[in-house]
Structure formats: C-alpha cells, structure tokens
Length: 413
Image (cartoon, rainbow, N blue to C red; front, side, top):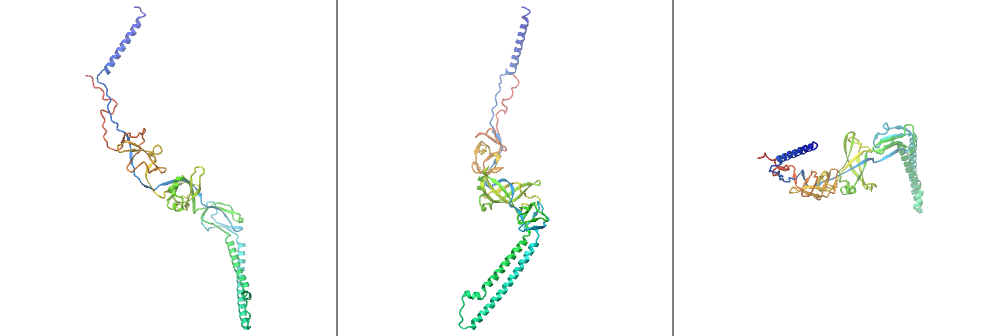
C-alpha cells in the first residue's frame, strides 16, 4: 500500500467509529420498549365572567352639547335729546344693573319748563270749563223764565235749545281740558325719559358716552345683555323626538340640566326646553332645541354661566322604557351579545337597542331577565363553544396529566 493512500484509510476508519458511537447512544436512550403515550384530557372550556340581567323601566338620559348664547341684547338709547349731566357709578363694561336702575340722566331744564307750561295750560282750560258751565246754567235759567212770562210760547227744537244753552261751547271747553291733560302727560313723559333706565336685569358689555356729551334718539349710550335668562342651543338626532316630544306640554314633563366647567369645578344648573327650531341643521340634519337657564349669574354667584361657554346638557325622557340596561362594552360588533346558556355554552344573540347613551345601550329584544351576559372578550367566538364560568365551583376531571405526553419512562429493567 502506498504512502499516499494511507491517510484516506485512516479517515474512513474514524468515520466508521463515529457512526458506531452514534448508534450506541441512540440505542441507549430510545431503545426502551416503553413508548410515550399522549395523555387523554377533557375540554374544560374557555374561562369567562358573566353578569345577570333584568328587564325593568328605565328613565333615559338624552345627552348633548351646546354653546351658551345671550337671550336678549340691546343698545341703550335715550328717547330724549340733550346733554348728559349724570352717569351711574357702575357705568363700565361688565357691570351688572337691575331693571329700572338709572344708567344716565339728560339735562332736564328744557323739560321742566315744558312741564310747567303744560300744567299752566291745564289749569287755564279747567277754569274756562268752569266758566262755561256757569254760563250754561245761566242760559238755562233765562230760558225757563222767558217761557213762563210769554204765553203760548213756541216750543224750541232740540237743536235750538242746545244752542241757547251753550252746549257747543261747553263741549269745546271740556275738550280743551282733555287736550291739556294729554299735553301734561306728554310733558311728564318727556321729563321722565331724561333718565335712561335699565329695561331688564342685565350686564353692560360696552359703554359709549360720558358726562357732558350731547345725545339724541339716534345715539347709543351703552350695549347690554340680559342676565335674567340665558339660552343654550343644542342639536339632537331626529330619533330623539320620540323621548322629548315637540310641544310645550311635553317639555314640562322633562328634567333638564346643564353642566359646565369653571374655576376647577363642575357646576350644574337646572334648565328648561324653550322651543324646537323650525328647521334642521344643513350639515348634519340634526334637530335643534333652545334651552333656557334662569338667573345664570346667580347662585352659585362665584361660578356664573357666561355667554360663549361650552356646556353639556342632560335631558330625562318623558316616559320610561321597559328594557335591559347594558354597558356598551358588553356589545360586540355593533349589535351582538355573548350569552352563557344553561349548559354553559356560548350563545351569540342579535339584540335590538332603540336607545343608546354614551355609556349604556337599552335592549328591548334579544335578551330576557335571567340571561347571563358574557363580559369577557372571546378571541374565537363560536356558537356552542364550551364555557367555564369564573366563580362557579365545578370539578374538572383530567385523565393522566395536563401535559401533552405521559410521565417520563422509569429506569431500565
């Protein structure tokens, strides 16, 4: 054998030895007659939590959001012309004034003179009336005396007698008195108008004059917003009319509240539905309602409801709905609910929910009192799938072990 072939023979020998060792190891570990047997197990079902449900009347809460608007705004103007001689100390933006409170005064000198002239004219016309009444009585006495002294005196007609007794002159005197009274009332009214007063409780939003300014009926002294009432405009789906209604009688049955955040607190005030607007929104086709809140700057005074504020409105339904109240998180895929039946198997129900709030749905069909609704999310829901209810004491028998294979083999015999 040549020296060149000898290394190949050695390598082949080494390979044969390695293979032999491998067979030996395999026969040592896997040569035992005992074979692994897959342990038999029972299906205990998927572990879930359930909650029992009950059908009963529920007063529904319709929720919406809105922006506060002023119920009334107006420009304060003087009905009298003249120079401003006096202004309220609270004549500045943000000042709150009561109904009837004087905002400013116009010079009254001219109006005092006109008022005095009207009073004098009334007195003169009243004196003239008294004189005319006296002349009428004298004429009547003369007529009676003449009729007695002249025999077979001709009877006067009613018109002639009226003229003799000065009836036209008396009527003119009486009319002059009434005219003088009217002139006096007008002068008094002009005098009173020299004081510009608040037409209702309000807050001044702008002031435009000061003492010494000359104003007339076209000049705006200040701009004000009513504070006795404030409005909130909200939008709702047309389906909500079923629970709210559309008449004043319907609105009177509702409990309406508005909530808003101010000063780090959530403030709630009682409100009422004032009206439903006669048109829907052009964008969302929503029905619009106007809510009214009385005394928005009142109690609690420290947390007023201001124009422009964002509020949340809550309206109770006029009639309760017989239904099952269910958290929205228990509803799957829009209108499906998982139910554990009497055999602890999964039943997938299709439900009818005529009303939904932000947190709950109200079920009228698909569920009944006593049903157990599954609250646990199931990854692969299939009708009839076995369920294991959390909290129920039920013994589960498992053959051999929960491990996939039986016990490890013992030592070789």
